[in-house]
Length: 314
Image (cartoon, rainbow, N blue to C red; front, side, top):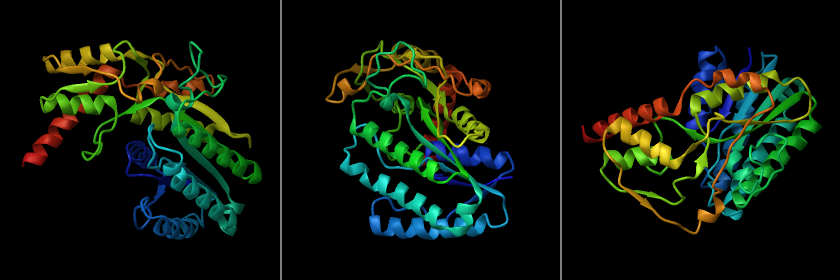
């Protein structure tokens, strides 16, 4: 069994990966402290010490895995704001390469990015792994650079396989209450607080939403299915696109109230394409792990947010 490190285990995807890997019986590495993304000097020290600790953790194991689900960037981040993230990734890989134990063992790295941002300017009716990368934001540009860093690392280290997971729009429960994360959670919170919902794209905008647990399972199985030294690009999506208007109707049906919608444009509106439909042709057999339909997922988010509101009041 692999010894595993989920970098970013407190985020939406990281929590799901950690939880599912644990349920699979894996031994999970948990650093002493969370990474301090706002302080580069502290972050560098934390990465160096964490890699050393991880090396000791996997000492009596034949294989290690690292899932990179960390970062501070978003679609509207500038390239300079994302420099810290890129430097952290480079430092972590350098430390792995320099460690005599980790560099000699078989290893695997999964790196996550947003399919929606990487293919945001694509003209393909259905986007697959064969579609050309076409983006409109600095965020996507930096993600491509980070994927290239992983690719070069993989070619230099033949004991390591890598998965470049390009994930459609993730959603899930128990997201941070301190920041807006995703349209579905934002809508649920506004409805429960009886606040208007501001939406900055046309209501016929088409997106692919995938439950975070489903995405995490696909990611884990895809990484472990790779047998060749070449980095593997895989799109992870539900492959059941829906419109914003349909999402509003789901909320209306579940809550039995009409959400207050304010549909308006912003400077970011041009970064978001009207239609994004995905289909993976790499390890398509792992689509069997897509078991959560969107209606059920929205119900789960609403239930989770109602519990959070009650806990805040008590």
